[in-house]
Image 1 (cartoon, protein in one colour):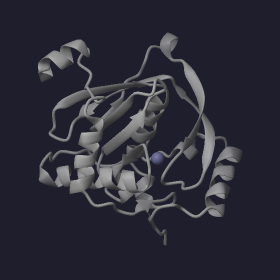
Image 2 (cartoon, protein in one colour):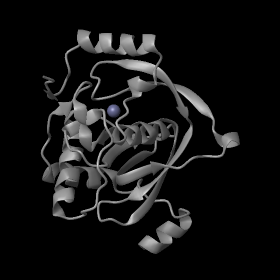
Image 3 (cartoon, helix red, strand yellow):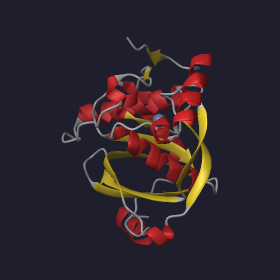
Image 4 (tube, helix red, strand yellow):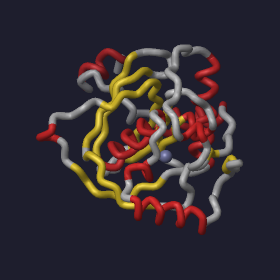
Length: 208
Ligand SMILES: [Zn+2]
């Protein structure tokens, strides 16, 4: 199927469900896993810079992000989680129908949905940058993100269920917001305590 035909049947949304294994593996083989930044590192707590250069350096960053995501067994990873101040995230995430989505979004913007279609779902959320902690957090059941792919082409990504949660979580990262910032004071404290009590299963960047 040609790119154009795919886009027609997909309402202009990017097709991120095909050749997932091959695409993810190719990125990982070219990339190198880097250690993950954790809560308290300033790069996680401010808005990242827009991507303006869609050249080979960005392609290498995306490869490293996929390799880092795989090493840490994540389903999504934002550039600032490996210490890079750029608005890029990658994902390798299943939705609630068991469909796998693999892709890259630069300069993501969450598309505001009409209030009547904004259905919230409670769900368990965790973050590689808050290792070992989990908390219940309400997110919308459906999410749409606009942005660009790694070549600079405009794209739209949409997801439901757990994948919608992932799109919201990763976009938040690039604006300096962690999921624990959306929790009540008590739940946030509890998440940080869980993190203190557990040793990360992957390499992290120590905070000063
Ligand atoms: Zn995260």
